[in-house]
Image 1 (cartoon, rainbow, N blue to C red):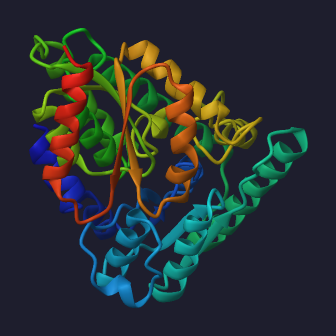
Image 2 (image 1 turned 45 degrees about the vertical axis):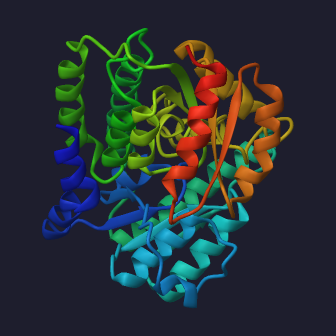
Length: 362
C-alpha cells in the first residue's frame, strides 16, 4: 500500500495536480511553524516544499554552504515546479535566505515571511497573535476571500483529527514488536503534507486498520529514536531498518514534530498558542534554545522504549550544528551521529551502523 501511494502522491504529486485542475491555489510552506489551519480555512491547499536530492541549477543561484533541504527546494522551483504562493518563518537564517532567493528567482505570486519570536513571554505571544492576523489578512486579500471564523474552526477540527490519527499510527511502531516501520511512518507523514488533510484521513484510517492486524517485527537488533530536522529520505531509513534497526520514534520536523500539539479551539488565539508553544523546534524555547527540544526528545524516547538515538546531522544545517553536542551530552542513551550530505554514499553509513549495533545491540 505505502510504496504505491508514496509514488503517486509524493513523488508524482498527483493530488497537487488534481487541486490545480479544480482551480485551487497551492501555497507552499517551508517550516512546520507555519499555521496551515489558516491557509486551509481560506480555501487554499497548504503543501510542504521538499524539493529534490539532485542538484544542478541551484549552484548558479545559491551559496554552497546552504543545507541540502534548502538547495533541494530551490532546485525544484528552478526546474519548474510552481506553487501559487510561499510562506515561511524566521526560525533560522537558512530558511530566511531560502525564502528570499525563492521569491526572487522562482517568483511565486504570493509570499509571506512570518516573524516568529525567539523569546517566550506574554509580550511575544501578543506580537505573534497579531502577526498571524496580519498574515491572514494578506493571504485572504491574495485569495480574494473573506476571513471566516467558522471556517477556521472547521479547519482546526480537521487538523486535530489528523493529529490524533497520526498519534495512533505512531504508537504502533512503539510496540514491543513494532507493527509500523519508521520508513512507513515517514512515508505517510510526507504524503500527508502533499494533500488536504481531509483527503489524507481516509488513507490513514485504512492504513491503521491494516497495520493494527499485523504481528509485528521481531528480528531487529536495537530499538532507536531517529533525530533530525527537515528530513525526507525514506530510502535512508529503509536502509537503517535493513541493517537491523527498529525505528520506533523520531523528532523530525517533517514527521513527529510536525503533527505534535493540538489546537484548543478554533480561534486565532488558540492557533497562535499552538505554534508559539512548539517545543520540538530547536529555535524556539523558553530557556536555552535547546531545553524544550531535549525534553520533547526524551519523552519520545521514554514512551517508545528506544534504546539508542541515531542523530542525522546535515552538513550545512546551522540547527543541526547547534543542537548536536547538546543532544549527545543530555540524553542518557547511546547516540550515533551520522553526518550526511547529498549525494549520499550509503556504504560508509552501513559500516558505522553495524559497528554501533555490535556495541549496543542485542
